[in-house]
Length: 163
Ligand code: ADP
Image 1 (cartoon, protein in one colour):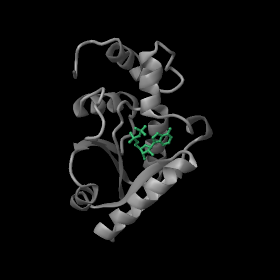
Image 2: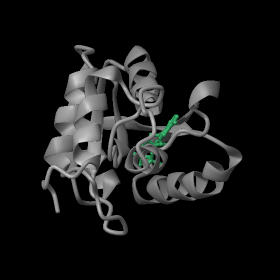
Image 3: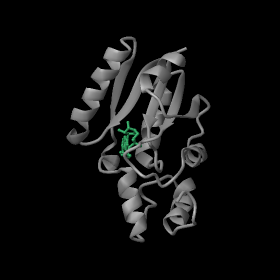
């Protein structure tokens, strides 16, 4: 069984993420969407809330969702993953992602990093942009799956959670 990991913060999940997850699910027997904490950012949703949002919009039978705060290659090794699948947006993503891929390869030579180019309409889409638009009362429905639009609006309006 060929297993791939799709890591990220997914805070919150966007249409760009869903596209990459579904394309990875077409390529691999099993895909683990790995929701990771990012110590440099104050999250809008907790790890468990992010998992619930992804569950609402990704229903492929070969996709599992997990959370993790450690070293990605350790997770990949422990779960027999052969690849890390990442989405690439503008050229600006490339430098950092290439460095990460090389570091991961040197830490765990069996792992491959696979880059899937973002779809044209998702090229400028990020979770940060969604949060920014939402906090300014903009319409986010073109950027995130319809199943989670309301959850994101509620959090933006300040429902008191995760503060
Ligand atoms: P961000 O916070 O920048 O939106 P994440 O860390 O949650 O991103 O990203 C998880 C994965 O999804 C990464 O591989 C990232 O490159 C990819 N990704 C993020 N946004 C998009 C997008 N709009 N189109 C394609 N891939 C994306």
